Image (cartoon, rainbow over all chains, first blue to last red; front, side):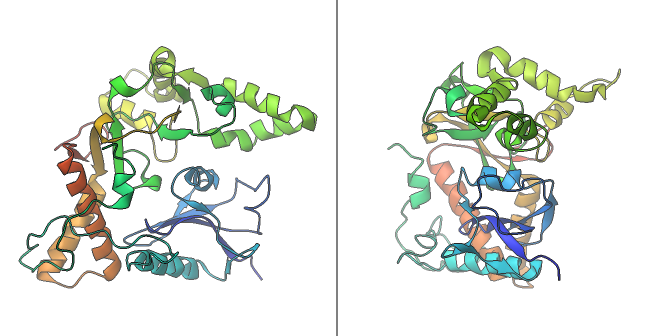
Length: 139
Length: 200
């Protein structure tokens, strides 16, 4: 039986993740970096190979969370397709407005109230800056 | 990294990449935010390679071959081997990286070739800052042509069909929002068509 897939790094709100087929090791001091790793990203969620897991760990210095745990155990996925589906669903959930301790503070408001492509505007009437944008603004 | 960047405790370190004409490291976000040269301190730490290479063979093997009590010191010494500073060393580091392997021979080296050599897929010069930045410090924002094309295709399908998926719509919606937010702050967004040239 082949090893399961694990998520090395996950940015659920961005719909991006790194995953690899391995033993549970992201919690160790010296995880094996030179293993084949795949990168998954919105909007297509197609896995692409990257050279090693170093890219994933670099991401955890930014917006990525390290691994995916239930209590102290990493969540194992039997197939890569299951990882992809998890990342896709997490991305959609992050856009659904889950402020009660969930992935993100909710879907960003529309850029403007103007009709888009002939369609009427959907949702938000008042334009407010998205929290993630505010974090980078000094004013 | 903290020791090299002047932050002994390693707190408040911000990692970026040196970039010339491209759209940055696509693994860490859709939009590449380019800082104004004037806001980068001359002694900003630049690394010839990804700092996680310190934890990989062969460097990690060299460090672990020493007594465990000296690992921290050995790691700093290894890091100093590919350490440079923004003003004093960046040009030389870029030249070394772009010419690595002597693969150019007698052919003319174009701006595109230099851009490709500077930041190529997963390979880049890491820049370590000790402070964050705001929109006032931005020179411009860049997006990859492939992403801009995908965004346009989603918009076209929204109008003409077949309907885009929910994830595609969410992805495009967020990109449009970010673009609008940058526009409101007077930060222009450029679409990078090739690494050698950029178009508005």
